[in-house]
Every structure is written in C-alpha cells, then in structure tokens.
Length: 109
Image (cartoon, rainbow, N blue to C red; front, side):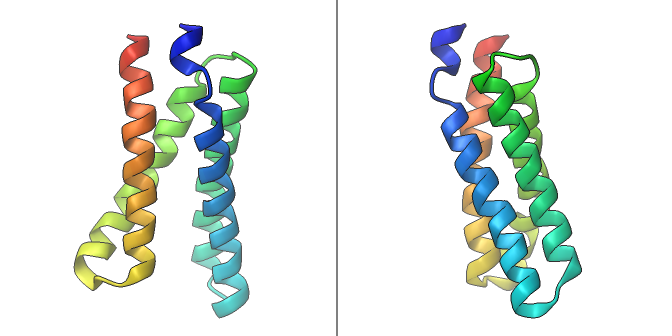
C-alpha cells in the first residue's frame, strides 16, 4: 500500500495552498466572506489529508477526496453557468483532485 500513496501528499499540499490562498485573495480583493470561508475550509481539508498521507495515518486520502468533492460540487455548476475563468479554474483543480485521490482511494479497496 505504501507504493500506492508514495508522493500523493504533494498534490494535496499544492491544492490546499492554492484553494486556501485563493479564498484569502478573494476576501482581500472583494471582501467576500464566503470566498475566505470556503477557500480556507477546502484548503485545510486538503492540507490535513496531505499531512495524514505523509505520516501514514488513516483517512488522509479520504479527506483529500472529500475536499475535491466539495470543491467540485461548488465550482462545476458555477463554471457551467457563468463560463468565467475563476470557477472554470477551480473546476479543473477539483477534477484533478477527484482523479488523483479517487484513484488512490479505489486502489486502497
């Protein structure tokens, strides 16, 4: 199982930093409280998941996958409706997370 998860913490850390940083930037730029709340929440889920994967604790992949599901659930409908760059970019991050952590979860079964 170690070979399956080897290096998978790095995408979790990157996605966590991007989403938390993006939510913070959105708050600074527009004063949007939902941006910081959602961005930091999803970012923390990714970061905790990455940490748990790195330290070989349980539920790391599952937390990162949950973060991807939450991000996808909020960004994909907005991207399809608005076709603006920000929700589209978030949707691409979410799809990458769903693919990466979904495959890792499937391989654990």
